[in-house]
Length: 221
Image 1: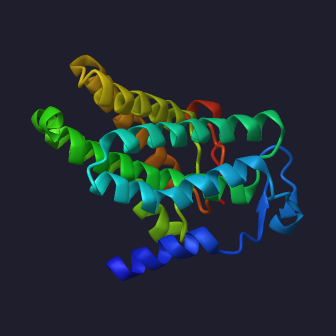
Image 2: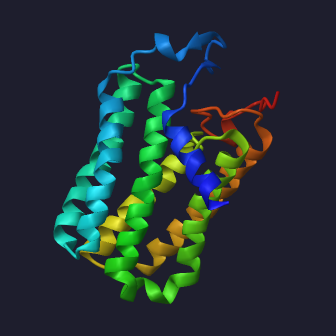
């Protein structure tokens, strides 16, 4: 079971993306026609490549180095999305790279919070584990159904990512703020439900769906 999941994660990162339908004009285009050599894709690749090094830094108990470097990576995550949308550099490959980088950065953040800040989190361990379960289950379900990590890029997921990123920042600077933690938990739960709604309904993976409220009719064929 675990070998199959690992293989699927690997294939999700290197697979040939083939053809797909664009959401705006429903035209068939090939990935080979996309300009994949752009700044957003390089930033996503950078984050992906730094994951092993950041894990080693965290494992070696270098909390300050890890924290500041992780902040830089969080900034590049926000920057690549902004640049891609602002300068029309959104590509199928970019969506895959961004989702793959986000997946491993999320696992790294959770490991770091447990490793460095467990005393603060221990009181909330069951709900905190549930938040981790939400994130992992979405991608495991997507891997099993579509052979790739989920890249829906829903607005709720983006808001959830910002809220969780701020929680990470606050936890490492001022400590755990209880009301903010429960706000994060509620948003994570809503985002999980919305993601699963799309993943169950869709017949093929699609990106930039925004959310349920923006979809007049969800195509499942």
